[in-house]
Image 1: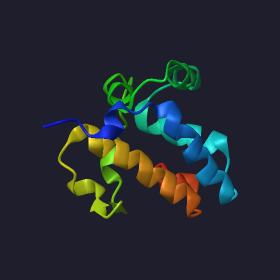
Image 2: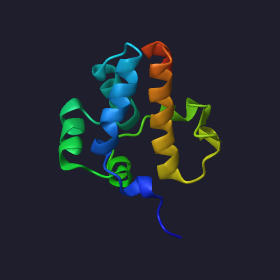
Image 3: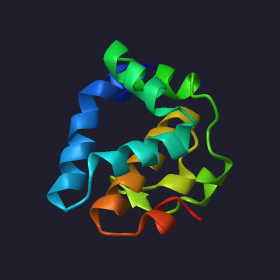
Length: 116
């Protein structure tokens, strides 16, 4: 079975859309970065390096320094699919990120988004 197209897309190609979605709702780029760092364990410099290198999603999550153990608390629907029911690990990580960005755009507090 062929890989899903999103796996080979660069994070850098989608990242501006995350930022735009957040900014349209009065949120900030720094909050998008904070969410990504919380989920993956990348530092800000490491995140920027991954974006510069145009790392694909599969590699981005495979090389993440430390996927946050609290990410399994992320529940809900993205693209019509419950994120907690996704069986393929890489796709689940991608959808976790999508869900967190959706929550940011909907006005949730960072404390709630980061499951504190």
